Length: 66
Length: 217
Length: 265
Image (tube, rainbow over all chains, first blue to last red; front, top):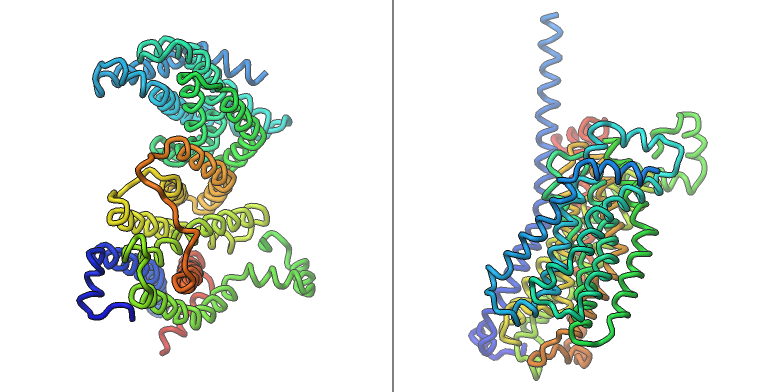
């Protein structure tokens, strides 16, 4: 490791705030572009599942009515 | 033939030809009001300012190149017509260039003098505007074709097209600035000409494809 | 692409090896599965590589003798810029494939690439600003490369906005394909002209140089990060495509089967 202490690594001789903020923002954006499509797919699958369930129960009651 | 039809249509509505010119004049008047009337300052920004205004007025009018013909269905007939769509599109855009770009280029000396542009650069300004606005019309046609079927295409077309205008802006202003500083403007005009030939070769193809999509949708 | 071909002809095509590959590539369930199995190993590898590269660059390299520690931003700035630019070509080529061969999966890929590219371009711009402040004393400089990245962001946003503006998503895909192809033809022209414009106006006080003499101890983590960002782009692309496939094919049998399997465990 280049830095002697955690303190030194955080401050980076005055440049620390810029470097760490840059990495933090990048981390946020990368997590967003990784998580959003996964969440979207899961949400879609769940919605299709409820739709299918509703259709199937609809069939069951519908038959009786007809 | 189509070109003549477009032009005679345009002449029948002189207000619409006048609009870009009035727009041009008004925005020119905004610059001294916003920046201050000092003549050296105005002369410094004049090449860029005139070019940006030309860019905007070409952009604002290109939205309507195909719109009325799209609405009344004559564009759909044009797609079915035997003549190649490439040439018809070229005629539309040529008409658009004549009534906005060329006209602006011809009256631009007046605005150049209002903004205190050195007289030596006026000739270059006219030539560069005439060449450059032709590229702008051709590129703007692509955006117009892609957005003609949309209800609110106006803002969208500027988002699509303005980034593509950048090379024209850079070399157009460079030509005028070169003329102001007394160095030869020929190379920049040649570059604008090269862009124009590329735009003539490829632009109508993309525009034609865009029109097909908009009509199908 | 095969939807217009009759069932008898379809059987014929299936026997030919090349066509069957194209057929598979055009088949949503196959693509969905293969993307899933690629992601199963590529996603952990990508995240590991990003972490290792970031820690290496942040803590285990020595500072640049001219710029000090602020140069450590290079390990995210340069990779995101490189991949953002490459991403535009991926998007445009996918668009061309979907236009020429009417391959729906290419259309899915094109739509999936645009937001990722925009996000990476934004990262490049943002980290560039954070790098510029301590190094050159300014958040924003109209430097050729910064300006070009800004224009690239506009090009990406244009594609996203155009796609959203269409109600008919098939037309949206084709319109975006044309727009991204026009953009691809224009990018070299824009970059060259911006480059030239900057060399004309370059302010004397700021010199952007010194990148050519990069020490090898700094180069290795940089190369790792560039590779990791390419992998990241691929992962995001595949994940976006999977989500898009589920949405477009929500009424088909294979998605229903998938849903039932999903609900089973």
